[in-house]
Length: 229
Image 1 (cartoon, one colour):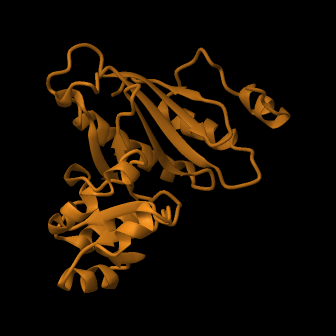
Image 2 (tube, helix red, strand yellow):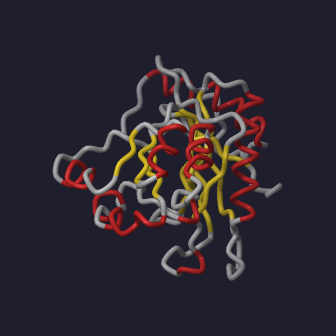
């Protein structure tokens, strides 16, 4: 991959052999975010888990204290009173059966998170092939299958993010924007790491956190020391 001049200049500030303390890594990620837009600061965590085994799967959610800096669109599948509750809580879209063809046939995906009440999972299940690969399928572990739609929507709008292993057993999550202060990014990073450490599968033998990398959307990767985790 060819990198431009700005990337090369930014990369010179990062020592690839050093695993930085979290606070230093956050400061560097901010400093090396030099694109013309407000870059997202992301964390990539390589784990020692083997996601092919159900008991080593990691999936959950955490509310970042300072949000993600992104406006999140929420779609809620509900019926009866829960429709009004979801609308009152600030859901961007609320519906049921009638949304299936729109998503399946018209390719409508103008939302970031899907919440469903348990009694709607039969309907939502039919969208598995569309929502599943995009990581949009509601899941009880992530708090997106629930009768308490108000709490689910409030948490998501406040900066709740989902984390899960990808096929390479790596977790990729945003912790904010380059425009955030170092303190806010650090608080978000700490909240995320606390949740990830707690999510360690009890059956796992060997090293849990193999490596942690911080990066901005267009910036270089910065290694973070795993010692304190």
